[in-house]
Amino acid sequence: MNKVIHQNRIKHLQKAMQAAHMDICLILDRENLLYYTGLEQVECMAAVIPREGQPQGTTLWLDLSWIQANCALEQIRGYHFPGKSIGESIVDIIKEYGYPDPIIGFERYFVGFGVYDTLRKNFNEQKFASAAEIIYRQRAIKEPDEIEKISCAAKAAIAAMAAAVAVIKPGVREIDIAAQAEWAAMKAGSQGTPFRTQIVSGNKTLLTHPFSDEKEVKAGEIVLLHIGARYQGYTAKLCRTVAVGVIPEEQRKIYSILREAQQACIEAMQPGRPVCEIDLAARQVIENYGYGHQFLDIIGYGVGLRQSEFYPMIGKPFRYSLERDMVVDVLLPSIYKPVVGGPRLTDTLWVNQDGVVNLTEYPRDLIQI
Image (cartoon, rainbow, N blue to C red; front, side, top):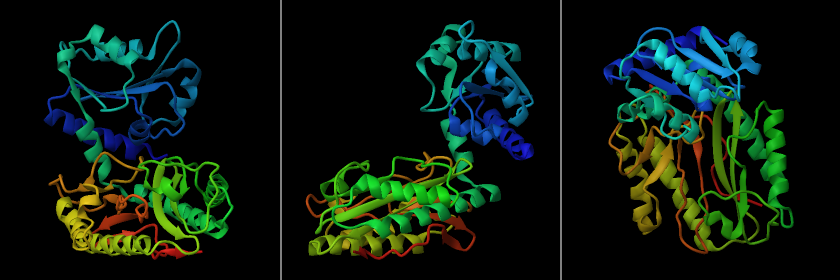
């Protein structure tokens, strides 16, 4: 681990905190801990970052020596549970910084009630604020080391896709196809799946977040393969659709439309382009074929430490622009038409100075078995 990379990220965060008049930023989420401290294997830990000065970490005393040896933070203390909780240890650290009435920034989604309750009993809850936008905007711009890790994850995801396609046939269970995909990804360097592998067939392809189970693939169905891989904390993913035998002609048409819409989206992507315009490029294709009312308002998300980052999102409601060295996925949703809807097509794309690089390059036409 290069400690300087993570320490520079903390300095960047501190500048943003000063601009936002935030005294403390509290980091508890595993992904943000990895981003700012370099720790992948971490449980029961928090990082407390002041607007200026040295950040401090607190962790379960049993892990203290390992954390101290592998963490970018210079100051780490242990707490002895159940005599002291992680929330109480965080309170101690914040008080030591000496802010009389601190404005404390929180991640948006990952603070447990026990920690929050301890903090509000010790500090003015009216001064609690969201640090989410500061954090996720910083994470959105990838450094060269991050691009390399996402690329490694992408190679593993591609290997998983090829392995899954090779075993699809009528009578095979979804979960057995998923097992082949996950094993192939790990052999190719993946260190785990960023989400439950989604190899699903039939009517399940219309679900928003389906997962593989014991259902058997049948002739005349489509099989949706949404596969991800993870390397040193960073993710990549792709989605393809397989036709098993003869499928309804409208399903083939819908996939062809999605293929055309994704290509229009890719061609529109460049640094400085508002994401709503990128969405429009895809949406116009969908609308021209009469399916606009069956297509979602968000077509892509950032990709990095999460498979779907909270910034950027590519969709009709958003007015911010793509920036160089963002990594995003498109085209996320299907055309949601009962019975015949469900095909999907997604890739992980790196936005660079020339446009985009498809990190999950794999044949994008409908796969016929």
